[in-house]
Image 1: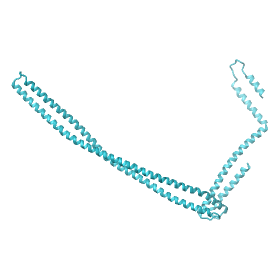
Image 2 (image 1 turned 90 degrees about the horizontal axis):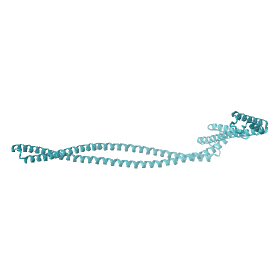
Image 3 (image 1 turned 45 degrees about the vertical axis):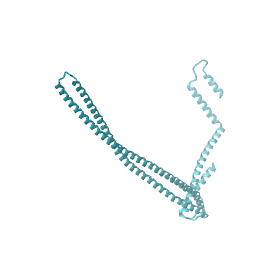
Length: 346
């Protein structure tokens, strides 16, 4: 075989310096030849075929055994469940089982403890429900009170804004009156200067001076009247501004008072809510402890029910309530025996 392959490859090897390799189809042809040789060797080697059959048979048996063992586990669990149900039914129905009095008494004791714990659990649930309702009522009360304070505060905020606007208008008007005052003062100074200039002018006649003097006096008098009027107006405006400032201060004090109340009820709300949450947390921990105890009792009862079920199954008391469980146990037992036999026969 080696010689044959060596001769084939030697014939196909390209001469030195040649840039060409083996054609692509030759690779697949050689691979096909090798495969045929392996098949030929396998068909002729009887021991190899037997070893392969034994290996495959062993794998198949292991797979079958695993499936049967899985089914056996399920049937055993089913049998345990049926025995527990049988024991529970017999105990609940008050059926006397031979040698089962001690287990029945233990189950009765555990059931009494479980009932007490369930009553305690109901009380805890009731307490948690009450705390939850109280917390909701507190939140609603806080929302109502908070909204009421916010509404009242908003009214004073609006009044404050309105007062500030009025103050702003008064300030603008005061500035305008001050401008009028300055203008009147300038006009008086200007008129006096002009009067002085024509008084000192010798070219102007006395009659004309008298006429101009009269005009100047009238102008000065008019300006002084305007000045007095502006002064009085400024005084009045300042009084109004003072009243507005007082009003603004009162509004701000009211707003500050409402803010203080809002902070106070918010802090009180947080404190009370924290207290509620702490109490709820403690009751929830108590609930978890009670539930854990109830679950432990259920776990303790399961093996007792199973033992009582074994006793009832052995005694086979003639009770119609238990007949269906006997049938289930018998069927399961038969399936278990069949599966064990199948596993042993592999």
